Length: 326
Image 1 (cartoon, helix red, strand yellow):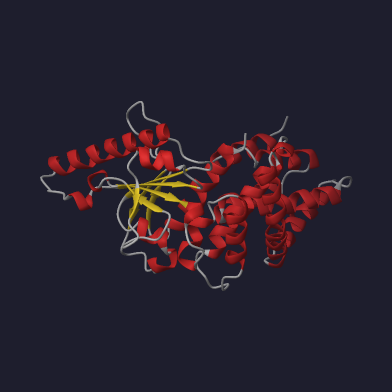
Image 2: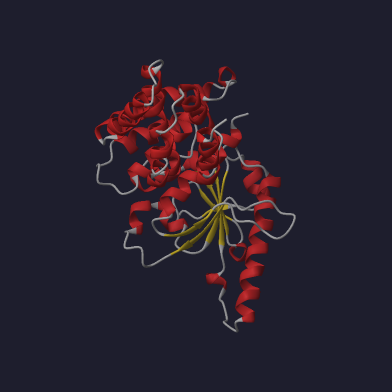
């Protein structure tokens, strides 16, 4: 199943956007039997970045909140599970305020926003989630005021710039149209590159799956994202990543590496690009160590490992194992 892949993309994507505006913790562990919170966000007023760039997403996150994105239509039991997480977090916040003797108002308590591509009428009615078109855009459903919970049905959001960052979490044509709008943004938009990086990573992970023949939506998404991936590759070459990896390969040649050089260069470029997409600039700091690998097979092993490792520490350990004498 690729649902986990899309759920992870949503967390990485939202975290990448919101870290410009405050503190993001993803996931946040709760000391109970409840599973992790997908995203815990605390806004900051000292980032110097205009929150208006986020549109509707900025309005949802103007206060401390839990974000729970779903890649398929949310179900009633999933909503209940999210509510339980919210109540536990609110209880922790209230207890901390009591210990510090700092009163806290209901408006200061964390909110919960559930993000779902679609939602059935029965599910929304069952949890008493209703639209307030006087104050909110279509597609935003609010539960009881004291619950501090809203459900954003992404496919019901109007197609306008204010909703772009949320519509990228949709499916099918909704997401495809949002990707086209994203590409058309001015290059100086501070959020565009972050969103594109998340989409490129999603494409790379989806392509590594072996069961895509059963998922038409994922196959269409890969085709749609291919030009974006190729564009990033061209930019990476222009920024000198290719040159840096070629220099590393030349050092290997001086050590006696002759066979498989062309294949090694290609692997090196792909590794450099994957490092940048997955870990940003800190990932590129591993390039000098990788360039010391004299065996093309080991380079390819590092390339495959980038699809599964989740931290730079894991990757660094693998590189050290590859460079150590056998």
